[in-house]
Image 1 (tube, rainbow, N blue to C red):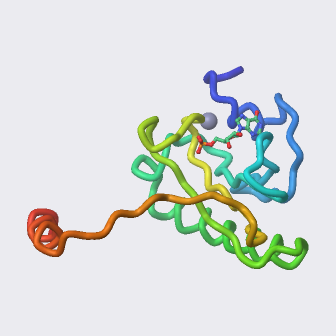
Image 2: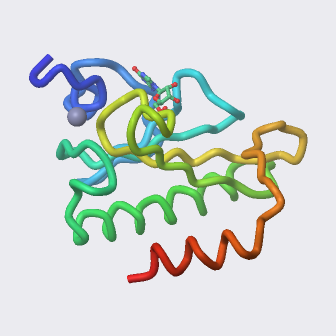
Length: 133
Ligand code: 5GP
Ligand code: ZN
């Protein structure tokens, strides 16, 4: 493997994948351990680690492909909606350090949730003031 990156190896067909879509910029294939039926990964063929080290131009182009592939999946599968997920860093659950967007078709029965907490308005106001730029 050229740079020890599994998704680069998939992009170069050194490792097989269940391909759904391919063009000059991206490859999309089924996730090997799907959350739901049709769970698809979209990767740029050129390696970057995540959102922050990818150029705005590449990101915009990849996201346009994510939209096109999601629209296709929504037509081709009996799903009612879908999630787009893009993890950055191990703390966020990223396990493969090559930029990828998950398209997760949703059928209404799955339990895939982020747990939210009731917001403390004072703390939220202070945090927004700290973070605003
Ligand atoms: P992450 O947690 O990094 O956002 O997601 C990585 C995803 O890649 C996981 O959902 C995992 O199942 C998938 N994955 C890891 N290795 C392979 C592989 O070799 N082939 C495919 N198709 N998916 C993989
Ligand atoms: Zn890579």
